[in-house]
Each structure stands twice: as structure tokens, then as C-alpha cells.
Length: 75
Image (spheres, one colour):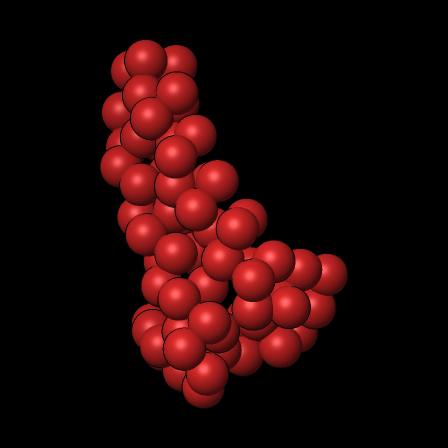
């Protein structure tokens, strides 16, 4: 995994964690949604830098290498 690919996968994992935290309390979700702007921008920039924008298969394969629990096999 190249450094830019690793950065993109890590940015996505951080965005996913931030999104889960923001949605943990549905009633408070609207209050926390603006906090996702920065992680979304980071993930978009990292995907673009790694040349993974539009190449979801490759990207999610990298994410699974980084964090196997996101593969859905632990359900």
C-alpha cells in the first residue's frame, strides 16, 4: 500500500468513526453534522491525491487491509 493510499484509507476510517459518533444519538444528530465537514473534506482530498476517486473497488480493498472489521465478516 502506497503512502497516499494509506492516507486515503485512514481518512475514510476517521470519517466513518466521526459519522458513527454523530449519529449515535439521533436526536442530537443535526447538531453534530457540521462537525463532519472537515473529515469529509480530508477524505475527499486524500482519495483524489491517491488516484482512488471513482475506483471504489480498489479503495475498499485497501480499507479492508487497514481495518478488516469493516469487511462485514464479523457480523
